Image (cartoon, rainbow, N blue to C red; front, top):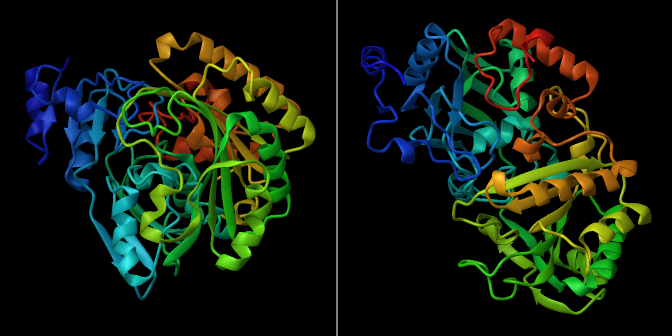
Length: 461
């Protein structure tokens, strides 16, 4: 706990709230969406602008404390215990430039804000599946859009500038020509290089999607997965999709269709015409009896209905790998571990189709562009009570290792696999080496280490 005199020094420099563990509102200020992690920082700073962030970082450096950042807290990695925790929810301004087709967002903006601001101009971003996810953290990790990712690539590929406060408390405005190495590293390197206070990125001229979900009984898993493998093997870049094997408990908020049952949810987002979309999806619709079909033309602003992600905070753990192909052997391995009759203690096993524009090179740190699918596993519950789920996830990842690229998508990497080697697997060797060089230049003391950490040197691992 910080002494009152030290905290008073920080309070004098910050406009927003500065709270310690003994203060009312401390727990609420530190609470993430993913309740698998409980943050117990030495102090939390509710930043309202870049000046507050600068003051918080300078204070942390002066007192040899790590800095952690919390926007929405959808991803649970490392508790911010004993740290200076900066919350950015008050920095949520969104400003669209319709002529330039760009948007500038504050550090605490969420995707629904951006979508709603862009839609009146006939524009849309490369957003995530949930409207509640923080824009900046998602984008710094690459940003895999389930609406238009295969058509346009990673969200990081379309960032045009970033405002960031580095470990010495200095603000920087970086882009392709101003401090290009830092700009390169931030796009894919997560929060290793500073606290991002604002970001600008491109929007796309899209008003509607042919999108939605197909729901099947879990008894038809094999037939549907094999049809999905055929669909994605030849899918156009305009089609982004995923399929989730769901075993959701009968809890409040879970639809009756899914509660307490084993079901499959195929998610579709297509930028082409309805006639072509119907043709592409016909083999899936004919693969097995449908429980529910919600695919149709929707306004882009209704993107959240594609995945129907939960809106209430909950504890959950994540596990992931990237696959080079969805071969019959890979499907057999997944079916054996997560199909009908399998002893599957997790609630969610997803295959997300990559490729297309996601595989194209770009001048940033987002790695593993050779992967064709992401396998993502989610278990609901407190980490200390998920031993069986952890073991199951490790076994499933081992089963699919023959088809794995060996890489991971950083935004799906959570606490169970957050060691330095796990993070390194999100990059190729040259990219990781360059990231370390940038880290040594901008954060040699590893002030920003309570994250997917990239240590400045092997001695700090």
